[in-house]
Length: 359
Image (cartoon, rainbow, N blue to C red):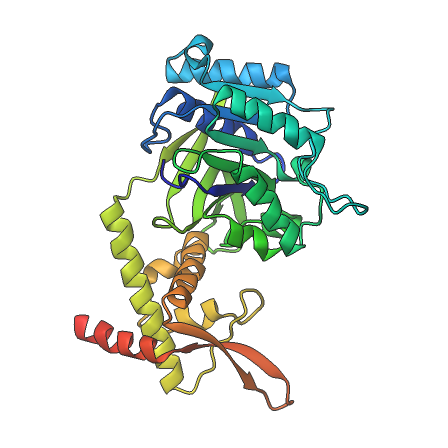
């Protein structure tokens, strides 16, 4: 399934109460049943869903409605989906013992045995804070925790999905491309990362914003494919579920837009350089890279299209960094303090020349 790489960990993040658990349970059911999920192709696998937040009655209520919507029964999932209620139980799988240094818990040993006996291939853990007992900002334990879960699944057919919360500041910034909490070790360890957030619309003067009632699940990282896939969710009163559908744009259209926006950013950065305008690397504040570069005429209008444009802008900045076209730099201000800036690399300058020839 797109955004769920085989043999690797995937993160799914969002604010508490946003709807992550129901949405990821829906994904788990689709994988266990071998059914298309939100328009994305699925390969059938044996799935285990660890629920540390919802009890058995809530899980059964959701599963019944998911199956009804998909046109299957709970019996169709027998032997393919195992849902475990861990509410009120010892759910910590990883917690370093200060005396011995050992981190894998007794619960981890029980889980490992159960996965082995059931032939589980895909493991969902809802959520990170209930199964991980070390510091979220400690890089080493984070990586060891994720690797310990990967060790439980077959590398050629399995996957691990970890569901986590984001902090309040992140949840309040729908434009963020960094939809996760804790150390960057979480971001680095995941080969794919999804972020769930409420859709926001602005009034005509752009002064007020309000939620539309829809949710957006965005693929913000994918080491084995393209990022930017968005699933739009709307509440269905009959199904009593958030029902998702992939954005209508084709993969060709998405890639074309990505190339166009990346070219525009490079040309805007070149124009600023030629005009002696320093481009700040800041992502928040009154003067950010977004403010400076989108003010340039060569910057595509699509990047000026509200929150969605802002999210794409920062995503393309990260892509240009990864391609070696943009680098982090700094300048010394009149007060002798240094300010972080963005600058073109030699590769970026050559790419600008190619961009202009292609205009």
